[in-house]
Length: 425
Image (cartoon, rainbow, N blue to C red; front, side, top):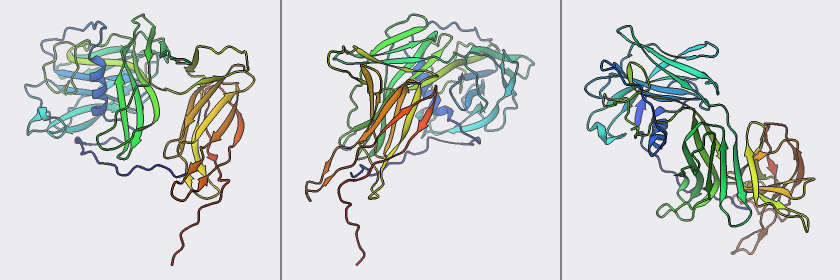
């Protein structure tokens, strides 16, 4: 089987130049775009702290217990948005109120220009994003603190949500699928995502969803796979993975729009930070796959309406790559990897297709359940040479422990002849 390959990948011009901190980190510029989407259209009431008329700072960001790096923008309030790239001389900390442990954040300078946002005109602006790679604990309360020149302190206390499970109910008829998210007090952000490829390379698609239920600690809504449109002349779109991105918060999110430029100027009128303006949130984000699930049953056994997949701390994941090894063809795309429950009637059947790199992943697997694993590829016919490529179908059994993340690579061998290798004349 010949793998589909991306023809060409375009390069995006850099939006900004910055001093990069060491270690794994996610740029705040990307996260600010997410926060903008979080705030827009939320119905939750936000109770701000009235900022002092003598506020010296603007604070903008959030603590995310799922992130590897925390970013908080701290900017002196000035008549214009042009902040110096020199050190602010501020001590910025977050303290776990349960353990008393204090983490000091480090300063990092980002440069924004007209190429990044036309708001800046011909000028450039420097912003200070304070960061730490220390882990934020779910279910904890943190005090954010900045010492000011006049001896006061700008502070905010935020509660971090506990880890929460997610259930996806995959319909076995024409009914819509359903997602259920019990646990968090507020769910300001829920997005359906898709990763795909076409002749122009890889791409991503996202659609923001609005939960149907506003009940505390229970958010649910109808979902469907949706269609990913073609990109101009890039041709047919092949979706490899779908999923959901969600952000939970213990406190209400601001109902007004939060611009990606928040924190640069002095225009903000509300705040949840004392002696400052701006907003500091506490969240726990989760990324959940949107996967296939059907039932296999004996004659006469009733089939359930929904196949319910639960993603929590106990659920397991199987992932890996599929390659052809006998003839050296390499990674194989569009191979069906299936897991069928054993000793159950009806039995859940989970399937995934490999992408152009040969990769596959199946999550939401129950620990302690035996599964039969089967890897199969459709025969590939060469319309010009009339040749047929057929691979064997490996079968195995697996069982998972709670929370196990197993990686298994599969060797899928040709059982038809290997193509002749080109020879040098």
